[in-house]
Length: 335
Image (tube, rainbow, N blue to C red; front, side, top):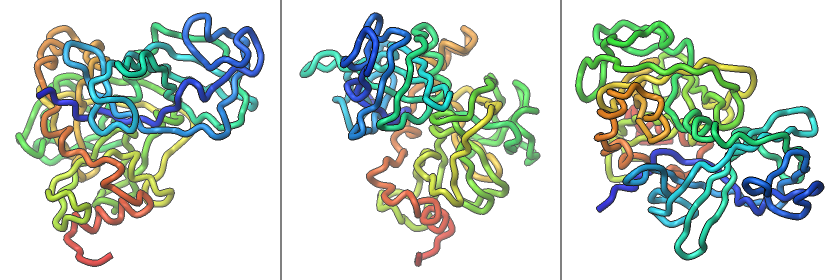
């Protein structure tokens, strides 16, 4: 049976929710090619309803809808079709990825994945599209990234900032002991929307210091008490699902330096004293790797890493999720 466990989850809108108010495509939803021309002005419907799309690699290449997605059918092929750039009324730049889904029942469907927040009822001028860069922009937000200043635990217990690590350094892993770093990726990106760091405050989930992770980055949590009712002690939770505005926050604004750490296999390592995952290679990320590493990673499966993930329906009230998991990890019986 094909494993379609999610590698990433994003909030999306149907393309029909973003329509041209003026221009050559007046009245039409945003589309591809001539159906999205620079100079047209668009507005997101006030009643636009977002949904969560779960994505995984498709056997044979590319992406598809994963198990547990709110929309689509698991296995439906997905393509990163375009990246539209808009200018908001206040001069803010907003990039929107267009995902194309093929459904046997409904044919071709287009979905919008905003890289920065799109406000319902607000007007945006389309200033251009960059189809060739769309897969790379998707990889930027889908990848598991640490941010400059984050300390990782080496094999000898030393705490070293991620920007000071080099290929070959031996990092402590939870399941396989010391493992050498095989590749380090680095980008400087705008800290907005889907790329804005999630800050986990010191003490939350037992972090030794404030920890900043990419939104899709998953934390490994061992529950002494099964407060989530998963029937297992080990769970993985995406950082963005813990945002509560106090102890876990989204840091918007400016630019950040991000780093991806790759081993011979997907590992659980320690950042600021708590367990988190290393880079999990997807199709887009594999294209960035040196040929020898890409070939080796192509044979690997997400395995237990994906199957241990907790989704929104299990996590419940996100305002109290971080506190509940912190207490579960310490074995407290009462809230």
